Length: 409
Ligand code: PMP
Image (tube, rainbow, N blue to C red):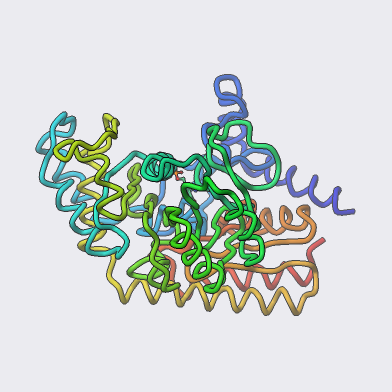
């Protein structure tokens, strides 16, 4: 019965998306799976976006969706922020392929160091993955140790992935893995006498929007300090959960942190940084042994966009309000899921949330129902609110879910 319902939903989806189907047929001939960002794939094929504005995306078939995916947290400012557009346009008018240092990167570094307590020094990269690779490498160099502590379910990039299943593309560090959010499991990590760093998301994002407990992070902090292990917070997603990031929200100070996603205003972005003594390994004037390469590390488009984001868009009150809106949406979904008793639940914190189902086929059916209703979330249930999503949009989503739960098959 469920199988049939899923097959029917996919068929109807395909019928409603002939243009996307044609593009998919072309795509699979030249890109494996027709795709160059695996997470965007869903069955039978993803719709192809044509235009987007505010919180709405229109596909090649003419359907419009309210965008609750928010580019997996990177789209915090919606699709057409005038502030970002103006900043990028102005920057580009004075030359955009500089192979030189410039003022904007200084301004951005200053803004980020002012904003995030853990950042005494910072450097830029092209992605969150790269930022995490650099942070881990730097921490191992600093400690002269080989072990990298990670948690089950964590995602720090396509080559630093610790969800269930195999990850043949992970970079070959010596990982020591423990269960997330389990205080007792920390013994496993710290039994390793050569543990150079531990990297953690205060709220596991791709792992299903699972917040750590404060006690877990505090104990991790204490044990890292006691053993001389560098504690890295991956704040690529979580830094949007409060004006000072998750570290301020949870009251735990990491030695290093990484950033990415929304801070680039939609442009490609990453940053890593932390204590001045650790980051000092990159200082050639102080005999630092490390160099950081990257043609586009200080590219003018990202630097300009990120300066505008931090100085003009990241209003503390607005950010708090958005996180409160997310909390309200999560509470409402939690209550309808509980009432329906169909094996759904919701997790998250603030503007990041995730819908889960005991049976993935039910989650797929809900996903397709939402697509028909013009509501776009991740196939796996992930939702990240943008500034352009208001209470009215949240009500539409919650109403649509409620309606579907009454009669899911
Ligand atoms: N860390 C976390 C917590 C992430 O969620 C992501 C991206 N989903 C990354 C790192 C990797 O960032 P990017 O996709 O920019 O490489």
